[in-house]
Image (cartoon, rainbow, N blue to C red; front, side, top):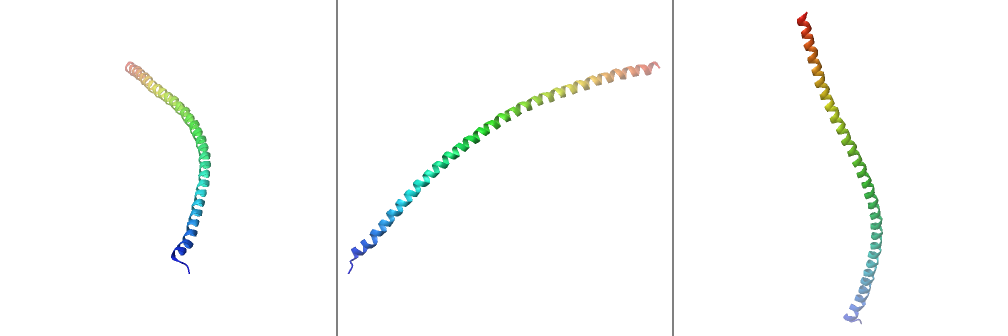
Length: 108
């Protein structure tokens, strides 16, 4: 006949052995997953650095476009100034012509 202690040992030892094996397997899988994660991290870091380089290039292009935009704004201001000047000059010419026409009408 089997005593309670023998029964506990017969059931408990294989359970402890299985738990130990499962723990070792989980540790091994975690180690492998850690290696894969580190490889992916290094790959993603290189991809991120490439994207950073591309972003830096785009920033440089944006700065160039901003400079061109500022030049066009300066040209627009110059055109506006010239338009105002022409309007003033044409108004003065119109006043001179009106004065001459009035003078001619008064004479004739």
